[in-house]
Image (cartoon, rainbow over all chains, first blue to last red; front, top):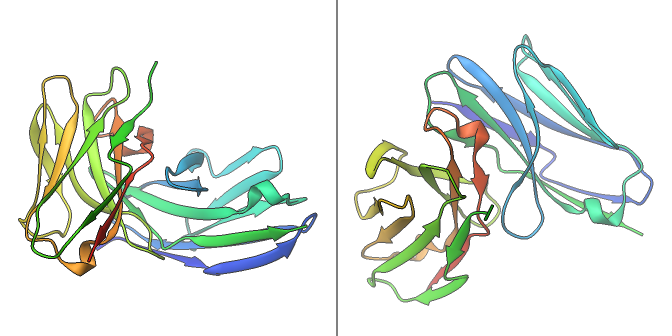
Length: 111
Length: 114
């Protein structure tokens, strides 16, 4: 059974801080690892990491994948209050129709 | 291009009742997946519909059932509601059933079972 564990489960930081969110996984025939941001309801896509793309960056957000150690991190630099959200990590396995999600990390950025 | 829409936004039911949730897929998307997200948990895969047939199912009992219509919209039905069914139900659509990475999520339906 595929498994995703995220840590920490919650985090409170001040604006301007840098945060690192962790995601470890076990999946049969790894195909992809995805990060989503969930502010109110619909998760919105941030990054997808695969065997051929183990590092992604977009503005203040970046993510890396370590396929040997089976984990990924999501970094957010110079955090803003608008970064407050739940960050979800999910994995997809080859031949699978579904994504397996972790419980998420709830990030709160205070002014 | 319209995104994924779901209705209703919120719903309150009592134990033992039945509920139907609806989802309209993004324009051009023929695959719909349903997820249940309990409070403090990540989304859990319920099932996927492709070409009006169930195409894959997670670890949910048969009282969770669904339909997909020719226009690719979908319904999730839950019979004999239990308190633990209280959750946010997310629908996601994609162009291909083998591409869950390409799915777009709807805003969800918040179901409360009393």
